[in-house]
Image: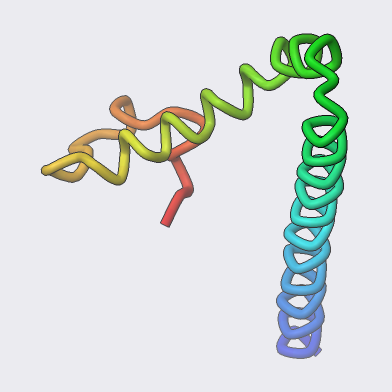
Length: 88
């Protein structure tokens, strides 16, 4: 019985993680589509407003880029942040 529960839990986690990635990808694709539409319309006011709200996304991307460009691996957990703690 315990083995079946463990398998069920693993399958549930795998489905849940797949759903999370699909949701993130869909959201980013819709955002990119909207950005391209507004760019084609030269809607600079919208771009300036939207730009203010993307600071967190930029921070995540910059943290991951900085992490990837490191010459050495972090030696302690303290050298990680929320964006790189579980990054593979």
